[in-house]
Length: 343
Ligand SMILES: [Fe+2]
Image (cartoon, rainbow, N blue to C red; front, side, top):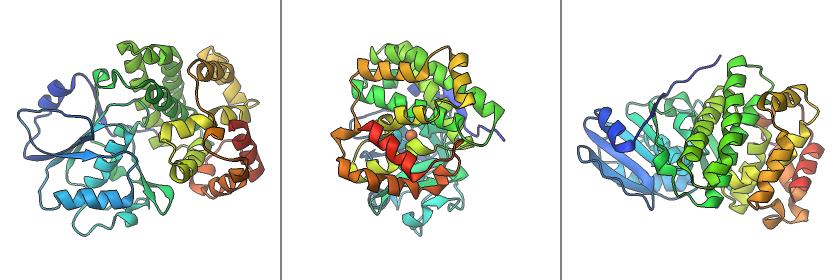
């Protein structure tokens, strides 16, 4: 099955939010450095810090528990959107830690609008929110946190720093390639992912040059990646990045970027992967290598010692939810090899 539950709108933020005719009280969630003014809306503004944990969600909820919201408007990167998604389903009795896992949420009454300012997480269309808990990055998976509306405004992504541009774009690419190499064959997801990756290769240089055309292409890649992983799911790259993201505080996009090349090499003899190169008309492994070199992508050795490789492989191997959907079965030794290559 292939489905898209979110209504996706392209346009300028103020105009399109006004067109939604939102009524009543709203909760506005943004990053720490963003300020938006919506003259007609009655908003309580919450500023969200990056990489939220379960404790942070309680702190945010304490500030808003007495306000009766009709809708939640989230404008920001993946952390802001994920936090807003959780806040949109919370009641006074909610234990946030009990929401971790699959289908633990009972429902949502508030309208949820997500406006991404980075082009990586795809959170504006996904059923996921990632929270730190007990030194791990854990995922809330529920149809009830899929936003009602995603508003795509490339102007908001202008002037993103180069590092953030590179790594969030690679995160979006990873969503597309991981869903594409899932063991569940889905023709429409395949089409979706092929196009997502095409937008990545077409637009990454333009995005790095801060051209608006590049920002738009990366946002489309990100939306398509989000749709892909909500229909299927991520696998090895994200399983690895959840481990080093939590243990080494490496940001999500960068953590994925560290393992992408090893993952691609793991699939280099796979027929579907070889055919993808023909469809996209690019030598994928070579081109990703060139992009990394051109933009000085970091390596795992910048964050992790050789002696930690086995532990990372073992922790990653525990993530059966993600590893069980890999097209090619993977052993702990294979994972160690991929980590070794990323050093
Ligand atoms: Fe991701």
